[in-house]
Length: 169
Image (cartoon, rainbow, N blue to C red; front, side, top):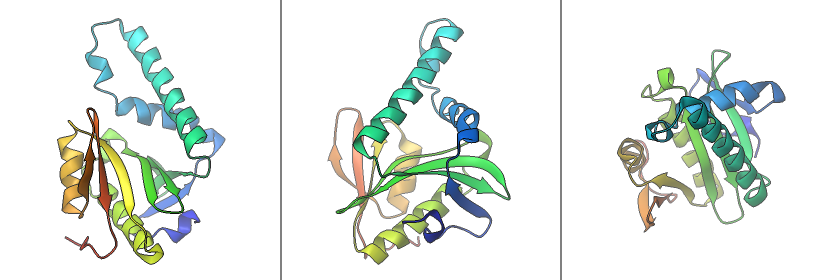
């Protein structure tokens, strides 16, 4: 699937990640890891740990989902987020969705998720994602959009949305 085939709100654009996005993507990932900043360690060590975690996540995604689309979310030409999504044979899996701190809570994630729900509906396949069990804000958003918990693990929950579910809440 091409990025422009995913319906998104008019003021947003999805485009493939480019090599010149690397600094932005590292800063974005870092902005999502306040959990690691709670570690009782020197700041330099924590920042290096965050960089290593980002690299490992990307390597894992590439190894397990080699055909996943890595997309930058832009608003009026400015980079505000990223989504990694794999259009598999039996499901569409959101591997990661993140926005810069200043852009969170503005409905951009909901708009992109609704676009992916439309794509999943067109393909007649479920849309799935994993969410940290303690990420209550994200889980509430996903539930509002019609996702339900399919499996509870010790750290993450697998949530699924199936075509036919009302997602325009």
